[in-house]
Structures are given as C-alpha cells and as structure tokens.
Amino acid sequence: MITPLDIENKKFSKRAINGYNTEEVDDFLDELTVAYEKIYKEATDSKQIIENLNTELAKYKSMETTLQNTLVMAQTTAEDVKNVAKQQAEVIINEAQTSAKEELLKINSEIKLKEKELEDLQKQFDIYKAKMESLLISQLELLKDSLKDQK
Image 1 (cartoon, rainbow, N blue to C red):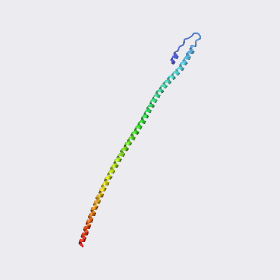
Image 2: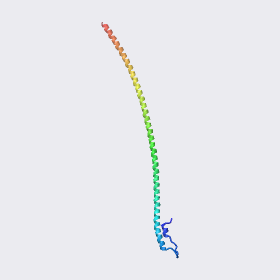
Image 3: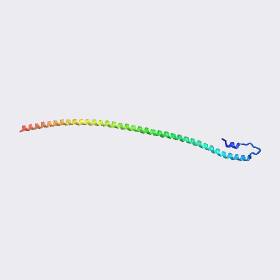
Image 4: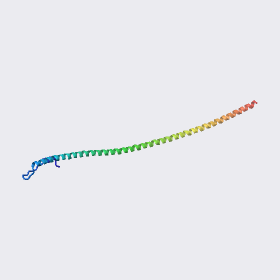
C-alpha cells in the first residue's frame, strides 16, 4: 500500500518540451498527500477500531460461553439438589412409617398384655366372689344353726 510519505517523496522526471508545470504537479501532489494522509489515517484508525471491537466481541463470546456453562451447571446442581431432597424426604417418610409400625406393634402388644391382666383380674375377682359367697353361705348356715339351737 502506498503511504502518504511515498506520495510526498515521489519525484517525476522533467521533460524539456511539453512537460508538466512543475509547480502545478507539486501543488497537486501536496493536496493529494494531505487527502491521502487523511484517508490513510482514517483507514488505520478504522482497522484499530475493528481490531478492538473484534477483541471485545471475542471477550463477550467467551463470557457468553461461560454464562451458558454456568447456567447449565446451575440447572444440573438444582436438579441434583432436588433429587437429593426427594431421596431424603423418602428416607424420612420410610423411617416415620417404620417407627409408626413399631409403635403400633408395641401398643398392640401392650393392649394384649393389659387385656390378659384384666382377664386375670376378672378371674381373681370371680374366685374372690365365689369364696366370699361360700363364706357368706357358711356364715348364714352357722347363724341358722345357732338360731335353731336357741329355740
């Protein structure tokens, strides 16, 4: 690519006959140098801007990838936490059910034991009642005999 310095330093050979006016050529080259220098500077600045934008774009693409990976990881972690919580809930429920069944068996056992105790007490009461009845009958007989003897 031609630089503004190349244009400024360009020299033309001079012809004696029907050549260009040196002063006009130099003035034109000066104008051309200024215009080309401006365009050259704008092109260089534009290339720098494009390079900077490409760098920023790459950085943002990298951030986007990182964010996507983070989001996927967060979703995976959330699912894992949800599954662990569900498993823990199932374990707690199973333990509670097992504990409740054990308590129920224990209570049923205690009920049977108390029913047996009640049954035993009822038998003892029946025996006591029969003994008392027998005692009262024998006392009544004694009393009757004693009354017969007094007459």
